[in-house]
Image (cartoon, rainbow over all chains, first blue to last red; front, top):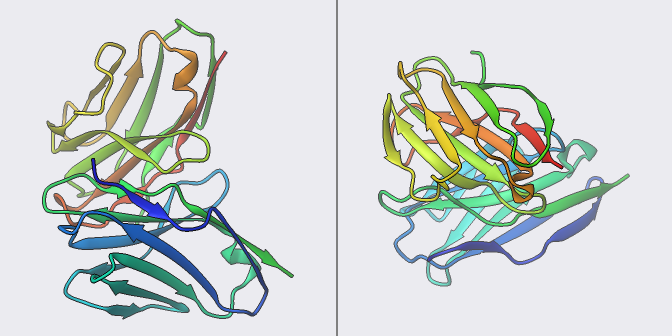
Length: 111
Length: 114
C-alpha cells in the first residue's frame, strides 16, 4: 500500500534556530496533508495542514511547504523553543482513504 | 471546548486477559477513530465510525478486537484475549465530519500486556 515517511528519525537544533522537518509521500493522489506534534505521554496535536492546491501555508512560527512534483512536504519551525521538543508526524489523505501517518521525526531542542 | 477524553490512561494486564478502553469525542463530532500506536511508530487506524456506523475496520484484528459506538457518541474498544504484541498506546480521535477533516486526538491509553 501507499505510505508516508520521513527522511530523518531524529533532529537536534539549537534553541532560537530554525528547524526543518521533511516528509516524503508516495501517493500522487494525496490531496490533503497534516502535520502533528506528539509530546511524550500525549496524543498527537494538530499543527498545520495544507491542501494539494497550495504550495505554502503559514501559521504561528510554522510554515508548511508542499512540492507535488517530487512528492515532498516540509515543516519549518521558526525560532525553535524548548517546548517544540516532540515527535513530529506528517500524514496524508487521498480521496476517501484513511489518514496515513509516517513514523515520525524526533526534534530535540538544545538550550 | 473540551477535548477528546479517554480512560483509563494506563492498563497492565496479563496475556489472554480482556481489556476495554473508553472514548468520549469532542461534542458534535460525527466521526470517531481508534488508532493503535506501537512504540516508535506512527498511529495506525483500527476502526472508524461515522455516527454509530462503521466506515472502515479493515485493519482491525476482528478475531480479538471489537469496538462499538452504540449511541453515536462515546465508544469502547475491547481486546479479548490480549496478546503480548497488543502492547501499545490506543488513541481515540474525532473529527467534525468524514474524510478530509482535521482529526483531534485524545491522550491515549497505554496498554502493557505481560
